[in-house]
Amino acid sequence: MNWKEVCQYNPKLNLEDCYIYDTTLRDGEQTPGVCFSMEQKLDIAKKLDELGVKQIEAGFPAVSKSEIENVKKIANEGLNAEILALSRALQGDIDKALSCDVDGIITFIAASPLHLKYKLHKSIEEVEEMGMKAVEYAKDHGLFVAFSAEDATRTPIEDLVRIHKNAEEHGADRVHIADTTGCGTPQSIQYICSELSNNLKKAHIGVHCHNDFGLAVINSIYGLLGGAKAASTTVNGIGERAGNAPLEELLLTMNVLYDVKTDLNISIIKELSTMVENYSGIKIPVNKPIVGDKVFYHESGIHVDAVIENPLTYEPFLPERIGQKREIVLGKHSGCSAVESKLKELGLEVPKDRIWDLVKKVKTTREGGEDIDDEMFIKIVDIINKQ
Ligand SMILES: CC(=O)SCCNC(=O)CCNC(=O)[C@H](O)C(C)(C)COP(=O)(O)OP(=O)(O)OC[C@H]1O[C@@H](n2cnc3c(N)ncnc32)[C@H](O)[C@@H]1OP(=O)(O)O
Ligand SMILES: O=C(O)CCC(=O)C(=O)O
Image (cartoon, rainbow, N blue to C red; front, side, top):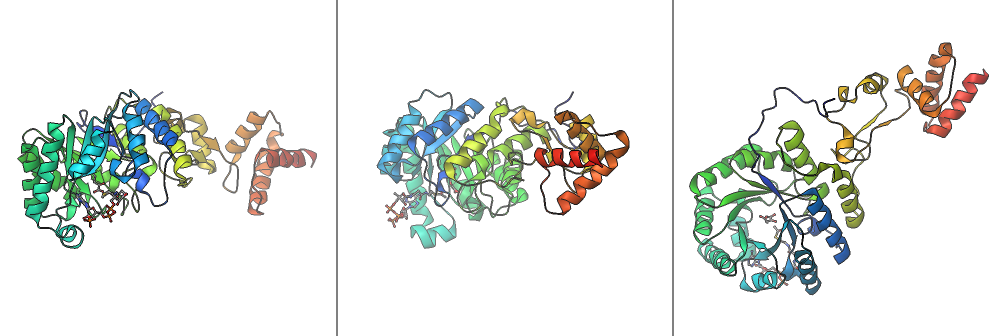
């Protein structure tokens, strides 16, 4: 049996050479209140590596002494993924990243009018010069270099293109379109990426999308359609404010909806999500797409009747593929099929002509405020059989 069934009009996207760089350990950890221990960071890095992501942004070494130790530990763990660190456009930050033995850095400096005026208090020429010095310095030290003109979606396109072309000329391997406050739309991100793509010769583009309007995944997809080759994610979408593009959602959207072969080990998605949920303390809603505990639960009788025969009738893909599980929940919306399947599962029997009475009792019990767990169901079956 097929493991997924989606809209036949979804385009098949040619994104086979695109890849994910995950920033759970850096932007994810910037979620207010989150602070991973070294062991937790290492566990998450290993799980991301098992998933098969190409690059792991392990941290921001300038933050603290122990952050340097964390990043260094991950960089020396012999993982398959390339390990990156974040740095401002400052030699001191890059030296700290170098001391961690990372494979590369993401060095950033904002060029938007807002950030120039109210944060950096510098002219665009000054920040461009700082950015180029940072790129050149990191390249001279043999690093993979991604350069990010932070707040790119609120930066005039001519400045963005000029600065990123300049970064390419100074040796940047990748340049980022960072939608720092999640204020871009699919159309604007695609436009910015394609304008940039038309102007670059060697460097490729990465998109880093925030989720302030719940658009981070679709904005990332449109960035890729605009010519970007890399997309940034965090597990469960943790990160600044409303977070970043959730890894699990972007991956499954690419994989299931757009039929992109990503070669990632998606069977550990739920496990990875639970690990990050526990370590970060950021609880995910039970109905969170892909990884929520109950997104493959069914109660409605009409759904359950069909799901028993073929789960794809009411699921876009099979949960077992990502380590998730399906459950049939009994309640107000149950019908005969659901109740009969529960009887079978528990090895119970009720005369055929009493099944509807059993269904009615399940409904009224739930409406009376009780959950219908197995124990309650057994009690109800007993009542029906004794009547
Ligand atoms: C969009 C993003 O996610 S950017 C990453 C955000 N992450 C973090 O901030 C990580 C946690 N931060 C920290 O631990 C601290 O802020 C540190 C250690 C990085 C810096 O601490 P401090 O030296 O005390 O600086 P402070 O936090 O007060 O202000 C930031 C400074 O960096 C400067 N700065 C900001 N971005 C850049 C940049 N890209 N390149 C160079 N300088 C920058 C600011 O102008 C400010 O400079 P100032 O101290 O001369 O005013
Ligand atoms: O471009 C990046 O990957 C880093 C910049 C960033 O974190 C942001 O602008 O939100």
